[in-house]
Image (cartoon, rainbow, N blue to C red; front, side):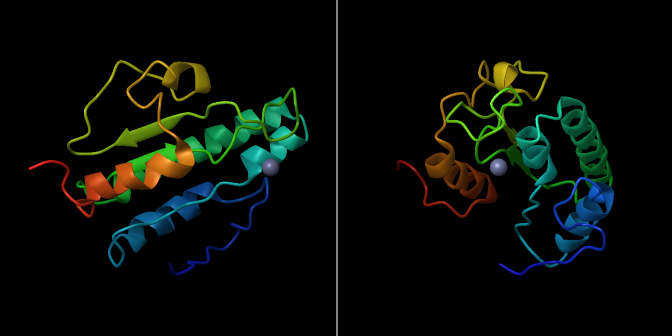
Length: 149
Ligand SMILES: [Zn+2]
């Protein structure tokens, strides 16, 4: 994977998420897969800063909205976390994390929010992050070996 540097996107609470997601949308002209890592939500959780974490999530949400405006219409989006960092614990835990898949032929479930509790009631509630996520992505991108005859 290549690293795409974005001005004012260094993993801090002041990151420019809109610029990062715009760069991701542009990168899809040259790449089949783009990964955007968001660090400050974890940092805010380590600090126990619920308000700061909420503000970061709102800014990330705005960045994703911009991404959707600029990305090709056949783009898939997968959103998840590599671990939970509850504000109350201020550290990583083994709690389940939400996973979202969105794209042209992704089957919809009834989940209308992206949160640990809401996503636990959806199609993806039983996946194992470190084992299943890349296979799910590869399946939608058509790069996974066909299952069955
Ligand atoms: Zn952490």
